[in-house]
Image 1 (cartoon, rainbow, N blue to C red):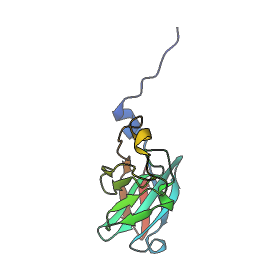
Image 2 (image 1 turned 90 degrees about the vertical axis):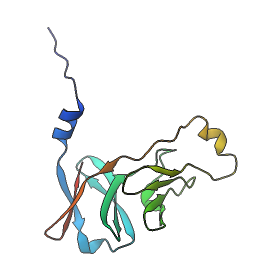
Image 3 (image 1 turned 60 degrees about the horizontal axis):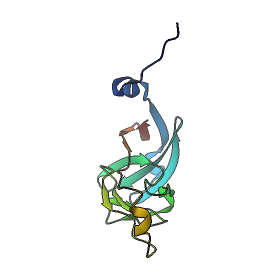
Length: 130
């Protein structure tokens, strides 16, 4: 008789662990950088309101968000098609809008928020729970 493991949201949370990704001084206010948090690639942002972390790839066509830019002090813009996301919540602020005609692809790729990860600052080090 074989057994199948069922992964529930509670067990997935239990598997998440804190990972030191950098020193707080390594990431000045207004900057972002990609890191590995365990086996998960994340982007860590240092904003006026503190440190935040999201998944590393845009949900539109998987562009590298760390190569994008921080807009309006609280949004990340993907470098490929200019989709924008709220850094704190991961919510879509503006779906992909560039180049002209990208809206045809948007009909196939529904808006999807970024996954966010808890961040803590301990002893001058930035920890991401992933």
